Image (tube, rainbow, N blue to C red; front, side, top):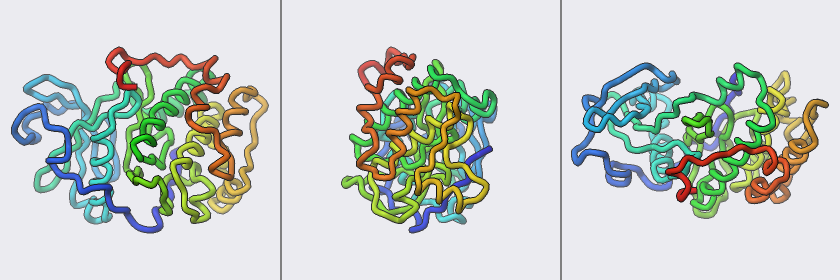
Length: 304
C-alpha cells in the first residue's frame, strides 16, 4: 500500500535559483537535444504528470531513463516552480547513492528529464513482493542513505521525503535517492513548510515548528522500521490517530525485531530533533557496521 501524501501547506516554495539550460550540465552534444535524439524503449513507470521510459541516446548509445512530463498538467497543478527546484537541486548532486539528473529539454507540450537508469527498479516494489527485508539488506540501505544524506546536508539540501517509493536500485542493488520533488536548497537549512508523506512526517512538521535537516533523520528511522517490519511505525486507521502517535513517538516493536535495529530506530525517532542520532553516528552504529554489505561501484570510490 502506497503512503498517503501530505499537503504542502504554505504553497510551492521558490527554487534556490531559477534553473535554465545554462545552469545545468552541458548536453553530450553541442546543440540542444530533442526527442528525435533518442530511441525510446519500454515504459519504466507511470505517474500523475507523465511517464518514464527506457531510452538510448542515438549518437553515443548511452542508456538513460527519460522522464516525460506534460506541461499542461504541471501548469494546472501550479508545479512549475517545484519542477525548476527539483532540476536545479538534482542536477548538481553527484553521489553513488543519488540518481543522476544529466540534463533536461522541452518542447511546446512536454518537459523531458534525462535521468540515470536504475536497472533493478523500485525499492517499494521489492518491499511489496517480499513484505520485509532482512537485517543485512536493511543495514546496507541505512549506510547508503546516511552517506548520501551527509552529502546532501553538506550541500545545504534537505530531502524531506525519504520513503520506499522515492528510492531506486542500481545494478548492484544499491539504493539511489530518486525523487527530489519535495527537496529544498536553503543556506540556513531552516524551513517551515509542511510537506512529505503522512506516515513519515516528523513531529516538528506536524506542529508547524521551524525545522532543519534533522527531518531527514526522522524519515530514515521510519524507513528502517518499515523495511524490517513491513509497515511504518505510526500507521493507524485514521490520519488523526497517525498524527497523535507521531507526536507521542508511540513506537511498538514486534518481538521479532532484534535489539540492534531497535536501538538505532529508537535513537532516530526522537521528538526533539537535536536528540536524533547524527548521520555520522549511523555509519558507526554497531548494528550497521556488523550487518551492512555495502559495496561501492569502482567509479564511485572517489566520489563518496
